[in-house]
Length: 478
Image (cartoon, rainbow, N blue to C red; front, top):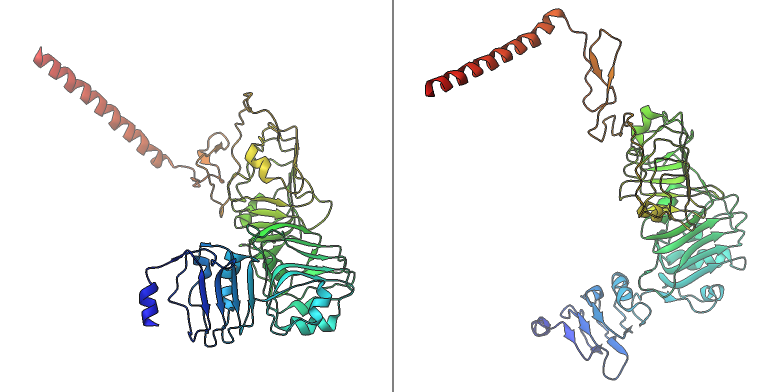
């Protein structure tokens, strides 16, 4: 082993492949492949077979950036590949043959799933392909065969069943796919299950589309939604009810009153419900929205006096959970000139269009229009600038001299602009209470008023003295 390590430490390129067959080696850590061409007599670039003492590969296939062809890893009775599967899949995708090891990289789903699962070995801890559960699936078989399955590399479909929950899938930790390399776009689809009350599963989604709809009795928990959006999530199509429980994270908050924020806790990162800003906008409590990143529901701004949405600087995405509900509806806001100004906002996931109309100061630039496109184009009209307008013509918005609304972070404005208000005649000018520099000034006494006069008098005397000195110097040199 020492000799192998010393010899191979300077080699990472194998132009004629790597074949390790019928050895007594316990690890292949002396290999650090980076570039591997196929073997000259095979389409395989790596073959590791019939090594009775091999317990680990000892290298990460993810580092094999230029591994071409296919990989074969078979009949190594002590080799556990669970921790190596991600690297193998990342490099070779489906170009692999792995079997007969202590733990293989899962089992390929061949043919119809109901027939496949009836004969699936109990050693299958990961499944490759589409798991399709329907009205012909046997609940007893599912409970038995899924007991050891912790991962699905592919898709999941549960449709037209009479199950009340999906707890037979509770052992699954991850349902994933690599959309950048896979030739198939996989999905999680849970649809048309009339008796389904709860999911009862804990799987995280990574790299798949998501559809949960037409399950009239289903109530999804925030924890389940958190898992479904844990990884790289493609578009989602939801028509669900969200149920809050005692163990729900305090970062998830339910909007019970769409306009009042008085009862909304501080520190919310996810809102569930319909957020509405209107003429009765709860300005005093709007600072509670500062940490909000996601809204499961909708966002409406109508007939408000708002000029910006600076109270939502961390908003990332809005996801519809109801049909026939616009994810964003912004209308009739005369002073609104800026929305979603931060680059953190990534848009909407919805089957309905965003509607932005009748906002005379609002310019819908190309970037904003693009991120507001879900499965449908945004609908815009009667704004200062609409999506698709010709931007080569120059026009200037009417200057709005009214004070900026407070840009909220715990009551502290975001911008430097401040405005001042004057009380009744005879009182001093006080700062606006919403200004960054606000200090409440009591009425001044006569003694306090004398100090500025003294300062002014001293300043005038200083000017006279300087003029006298200059004239004196001028006369001397004359």
